Length: 422
Ligand SMILES: *Cc1c(COP(=O)(O)O)cnc(C)c1O
Image (cartoon, rainbow, N blue to C red):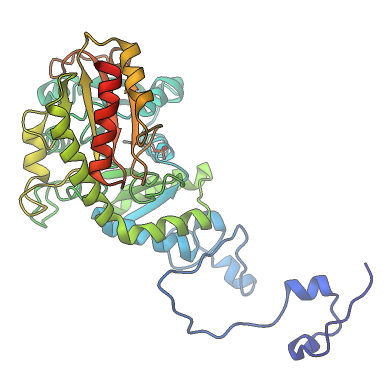
């Protein structure tokens, strides 16, 4: 490389004229003035974090947010998101992981040992079950599924080896809302750790760490996992998850596993979630209103034999939803923009597929919480091990409501129902 001197008009460059340009570009002395303040926080990105001197490096500690050690253990950007998410969900400590599923996996790996047993709701997020049947079973952790609508049934499945009970409110796809208060009370009395997949509630429908809602925190889950991929991201463009706790000892157990597993998130993705977070409540409530309007309208359609939305009278677990989420939202209660319908079994699988394919605004795809409305058909029998008397038989179709105008979505459903089931 030919030697290039710094341009003479750049006065600061002249302070180190003996450096080659490649070195000079890396060790350039210019510092922008402090005091730049803007609505959005800066994006800090790092693997390497630079220490002032060797003593500072030796003093490094990664167990709290008092300093920086390595990109994997946090940057100003990730610390900021962790603190805001803790506030959202009513917790005190937060860990970020690369997906919602990574939050589930990290938590189970941190809390379970060979010989331990774990209980999962039968309507849990599918990959939580698959992980239990795969890696956790290989490591000698046994799991059983419990009927999320049966507190006594959960109690009957607890053994002296049960260490962890997973909770979901409502359950995935079929949306049954469990009696979370009774289940957490039961597990507390037995000294069993409870972890709630709080993706649906998102910190907005109820406070998982204060289930009695009186600010006492006398009854709450021990930890939550949250697929930030959904509402906090809000764009359908970021994968991320969080693990939130209120107990420092529990946080440290999970944090040590998190460190040993080498989990981290990127600065740009973190910034994308920080950018969407201020509008989460507006988006959540708008999607709730639109979803309830469409769910009620679908209740009147002849091809639909059941609408599974916990805020609708008569839906499985409606009373439990009402007890936990019913008082907020000016008496209307609060729910996410997600619901399913059961299609009359006289319409076969082909007709249901034709219905999904006929939708124009609703796109076929997984996930939710973004601007685009989504639809997915599910074959329930292959997904469940407990009997489901609360559900009518027929193909389940799940809708995730986006941010389109509700009358356009209704018209889209109307034309697809006519095209498939006429
Ligand atoms: C989407 C989802 C997850 C997983 O999140 P990813 O970021 O897609 O891994 C976990 N739990 C629930 C309830 C979800 O809906």
